[in-house]
Structure formats: structure tokens, C-alpha cells
Image 1 (tube, rainbow, N blue to C red):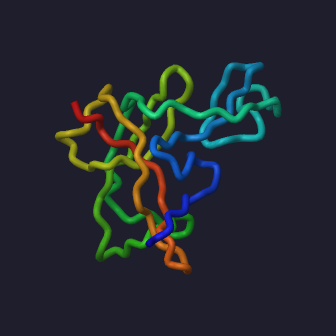
Image 2: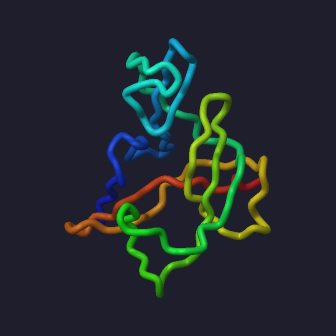
Amino acid sequence: MTTQVPVVSELFTWPADEPQLIGTFFPESGVTVFPQAKACPRTASQNGERVLLPRRGTLWSWTIQGFLPKSPPYAGPETPATFKPYGVGYIQLGDQVIVESRLTTSDPDVLKIGMEMELVIIPFNKDADGNEIVTYAFAPVKK
């Protein structure tokens, strides 16, 4: 059995039947950020609280990543020969925060600004021990 390992610890709850992204809420300013941060981007306060973000949100904007990202920092297994374009979007999670995310589809006929999206966990790569590295993405909610 393959072990699934998050791409970064404390980025999302894992393992979990209904994973959630983990952010930081700064009560003094009312600002929520993702990923977690030690200081508020508005006030520099270090009085943040770990918060689980909503699993569903609204597609705020999107594009298609049509070329292989530079490595580093990108750590995916693709090569120029195996790369397939993928969707990237901004997902608004309630009134709290907008997060940038990979999307599970790159079909421009499917992606619509304002559509409902849901957090999913997807395979990303394998580590040296053969573990499957997983990351988060957002998928259109099936109606």
C-alpha cells in the first residue's frame, strides 16, 4: 500500500475524509491568510490563530498554465515532453480569504467565474521512499 504524504506539512488537514486548508486568522485586523503566516500582512501583529478554511468556495478568476514552470521552485515530475496544461485559479472561500490553487480541469468550456468549487487532494509526485506526495486543488462542484 502506498503512503500518501502532504507536499508541505500543515498546509491542509491530512489524512482526512474532508480535508481543509489551514490558514491564520489575525483577530486584531480581521485578516485571514493562506498559507499560514507568523505576522499579519496588514498590521504585522504576531497574534494569529490557526484556522481551518471552508472546503467550498467560488471561482474568482482563472487561467490555463500552458507551459512547464521553472524548476526550481517547481518540483513536479513533468518534463517538457510529458507536460500537460492545467488550470490555475483564485478561489474565494467565504468572506475570509482568496486562495490561489491548481484546478482539476483545464477545459475553458467548463470553467466559469462565479462557479462553486470544492477542495480535493490530488497526487503530485513521489518521494525517494516511494511515498505518493499529494497536494490540494479545487474541482468544480457537480450539480
